[in-house]
Picture (cartoon, rainbow, N blue to C red):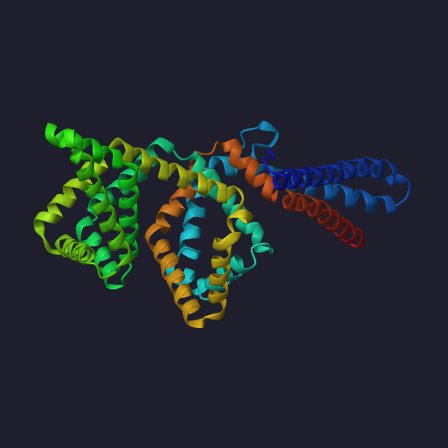
Length: 417
């Protein structure tokens, strides 16, 4: 099992140490048989035989102990072997309990977080996105992009659009429009709009002058037509309207402009305080939201937002550029330089994470135990053996060498006695 480069490296190191340990055991066996055959010729070969013999015993004993952790030695169903695969559920529960009792305690989490400057890290992250923390940003961005792409777009889009429509339905449009219009009137920002409306009316009159003349001609009797007075009347109407619009445009104190302003002020008041007007505006809002074009517009907003989020996640450097990047960078400087804001954010982060640990700690450890329980026995055996197998092979090597030294010591004492 070598799913990642790190796992592949650990697996290769484990196999290399296992070959060394097994090779040392085979070497001890060869030395034993050679020394045993040469022992009659010189007493010194007896010490070498004792070293190799005890080394074989120690190496075989440790091989059996290490192998028994993961499988049955030589495939024989010896009792109390294959310990890890037989007890994987209990191992998962024990590991989960260890995490819960030693790491996911609110007091432990709070004490650990008290030494972490969350606001400072966020400030450095926003101020220098291309530094070492940029790797974290790019990793987080890829994760966000993968999550957004993996979500059910139909269901998620429907939820977002329903939420957006629900918020629009909750808005009391009448008072909001009334307050906006009242604020415009108070600050005189409505005057350019009135002037623009007058100019639009003048241009519309010029473009549709022929319609007024045709209407006067149709409404006039035969005498007016015969004498040509209909044309004179039409000219008078058109000229009077043009002069009226020109005077309104040039005179800020024109009486009709004042009437228009009075009408706007009354409209602003009615929008805020007249129940009948509020009901009328609410009905217009409901009809507008029921229009299919508005549904298409809301759907377009969601799709544009999703594409923008994906683009920002896939290219965080571009997302951090421009005005948004400047604003985020400035906020990063503020996070680093403002001690009060930094203290408040760190306190909020500690409370949020500690609260999450307290509320969901059991679910987290249950995830660990359920995951281990769901693994096949072969999977957990391979994972544990790959993780610690290299160190366990050192036990075999040490057992072989230490056993050999003990064998020499016993042989020496036996010779002296």
